[in-house]
Every structure is written in structure tokens, then in C-alpha cells.
Length: 114
Length: 115
Image (cartoon, rainbow over the protein chains, first blue to last red):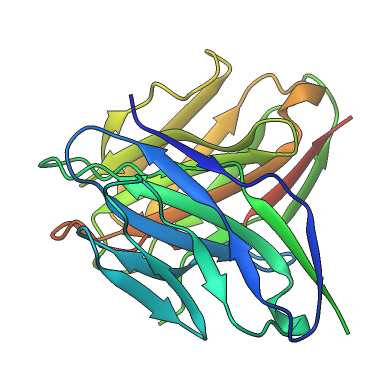
């Protein structure tokens, strides 16, 4: 079946540090891959996505590249800010007709210290 | 656009009581999802609907849980009777069919506490 494995948290960094949150997946076929972010007290919101191998998703300074050979979709940001403190979820969607289910990882809590 | 609307935002009830959570999806969206989030189990998909019809309810934990979608703009998740282990944040999300990268839009969640 489909599964997503995320880096265990929590992760604590100083402001302006480099961020990497690892994500690997198991899926049949060629899934679409996503990163969602959950700020305190809110629902999840889409941060970025990639739909095929070698695609790079980017948004708000965050990037992730769909690596089929390593089945990975690691999230990176060059210089984090306090406002980036949140929980980050990696997710995949298998591309089948009528399949709208997302499979989420367990989430990684990120705290940025000023 | 108002986004996905959930009510109530917080619910505190006693064990054995019936609890009803409500969701209004984004207008025009034809998929609706109910998730549960806990520290122990993370984010779990409970059930999802397409055009008001339940498609996959394999995540519904047991018969105490039921969900309905009487029309395109309203869905309920009911727990009867409630138990302390049902305490969690329940999210509703909606999306529109079409492309593999379509985003799910989440509501703010309902924090349920069962005493």
C-alpha cells in the first residue's frame, strides 16, 4: 500500500538557519507529492506540490524536488524565520481515476528560535 | 471565498453523550473529507464523499461514528455514544475533482473533549 515516512520531530532551529525535513514514500505507479503546513490552531494548508519526477515545487522560500530514484520529496528552506514555526506534513496522492485520497506522514513539528 | 467552515470550534461533552460536528465545504467543490488528528495517531482519514455519496468509509473507527452529506453544502459527523478516547481535533476538507495535483482545503477544525 501507499505510505509516507517523515523525519521525526520536533526540530528546533535558530532564525536564518538552513532547514531540511526528510520525506520518503512508498507507492505504486507515479503519485503526486505534497507538503502541507499547519500553523498553531489552524487547519492544514498546501505549501507546495510536484506531480512528476524531477519536478520542483516551491513556495514562500520552501522547495522540494520529486526524486523518483530515491522515492523522496525532502523539504528545504535556505533561511528560516520565526513565522515558519509550524507542523509540516508530507503527503502523496496516487493518480487513479476517482481517487482523491491523500496519504499523510506523521508530521514534523518545527520551532524557530529568534 | 469563506473557505471551509466548521462548527463548533470547540466542544466539551461527557462520556455517553451524542456529539454532532458540522461542515460546510467550499462552494463548487465536489469532494468532502473528514479527518481526525491526535498526538498518538496523527492525521487519519475517516471518510470521504463525492457528490454527496460516501466513497470510502474504511477509516471510520466503529459503529459509534456516522457521517452524512444531505446536500452539496453541508455534512455532519456524529458520534453516539461518545467516549474519552474520541477526544481529538476533527477536520473537514474539500476539493474539486479534475487533476492529480488538486489541493484539499481544510477547515479550522473542531476540538472535541470527552470527559
